Length: 175
Image (tube, rainbow, N blue to C red; front, side, top):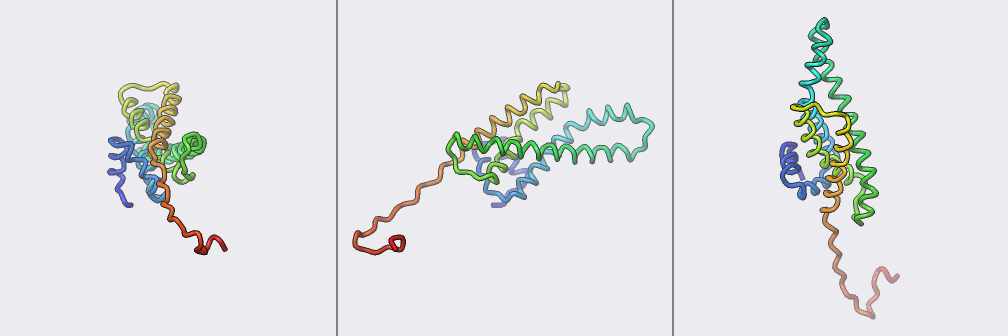
């Protein structure tokens, strides 16, 4: 299954139930998607960071600000990847409670898709109102709720039809 990053973002925002199907994508697609969400968040958070850094670094050269933004994106990406991995570890217990058959790769993909709404919401709100650090906990709860929902809507595997055997026939499993 191939899908573009914008299509994946659209499905995550508009149809979260269908977003649970992204667990079948290769891990690389979900990593690209996590970088993409991080880039959007970094661009939305960066105006306040740029204005603060310009006030404090008026004497520094013009090279410092782009370098600082690249470093900011790299550090933010690392934090997001650690956060997604932590969510996936928590999701191991959630999937056990919901009795779903998912492996860590699927849970990591679901965790990467579950941060879409909370990340974009916090980034947009932060453009207009500076958020206090307490909102990190609200962000974590929202991500966890979204992840739980994505695990919940994963369909159960269909049972395999059993073919009745004749009593006198020898089957491979009987040997």
